[in-house]
Length: 323
Image (cartoon, rainbow, N blue to C red; front, side):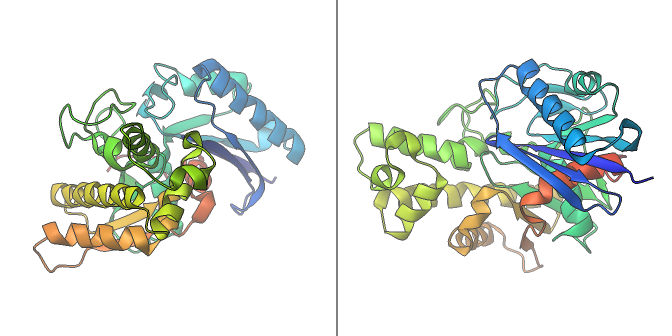
């Protein structure tokens, strides 16, 4: 009998679904914006409804569905499938997401894990992390995070949220407040969502920029408008780029000296900026690293489906166990 798995990648801006067949091919996909205003019940109720639609559209019988894997950008008690908090979807907190989803789906097995860790599993097995015993997957997107793979197994830590390094404090009490509740974490200085908040703060202080016209209004400024303005030599865009480069360089170096892992696989939407961002980040890292042993910065290879594939791998069993 053909067996199926559904992988779901919950992001700060969008949620993506994929139905995988027995050969691990995605046979049907679905995406929708992530609604930051939804309650946990509303948010995961929508996910359950979309899973049911996918099951019906593919004609999958209940006994043919192995399970549903979900990657969420949250602090998670892994064993319980319980979400503590979510910095980019601040209302998604203190919620038993795994049991809620399974109940809504009539008892279908559900495995919940951090979205970065799910994507790390995919990159380790099928992407840029192949051949490395130790690997960090580091998404640079709406938020920033890291997930550590040790000899094929994801490291989750004591409670399940190992790798939330974007919320390590760089400047205690300084800067903008992050969704984690602190000021001065790395994410607050250089993530896609937070750099836009810095830009808007600079504009409110009287600084000029072409990003407003490029985006069609200050409220529409995003990383795309930032990149276009940077390419045009806009001083405020250059300032934002330099801030991102500085803090990303420090973040990667601190991960390297903390763990001595020499393979960083970088994913997420900011990677689309390519070498204009990644090249200077490597240079910033090199200014701190006074050792000639190789450190690899690799771009993720699984593409837009990375999070969905990784979430599905949770069901297949690749995500089980601790290093």
